[in-house]
Length: 142
Image (tube, rainbow, N blue to C red; front, side, top):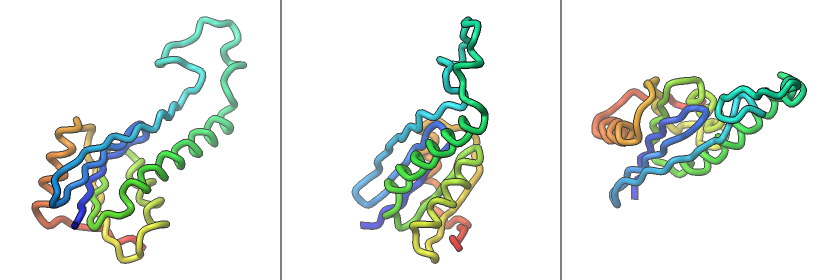
């Protein structure tokens, strides 16, 4: 059974659309990553010593990078058995994911990469259906 996978990704969430002869499935993978740990929903604390409660920038950046790596590994495990793969999204997360994919996929595996804006889950599923209906340009992993 041939499985085509479309994957919309940013640093906060990945929407995976699996398209096969058995039908179509959509899965959402959340990263729960936060650029400013110690803050709740973006609200600033009224505590006098908030700066002491937040890690130094280099520590925060290392934690952020480690958390993203774990998130990307979860996504890679989900899509590694695809026969065709489309990766798209608004930011740099798609490029970072492609680098992770290069480590586990065969050298001749072709991945289509597109830059798109934020989309709803239904728009993502429709985009994946349209992509796999027609031939699209692909990038071969090195």
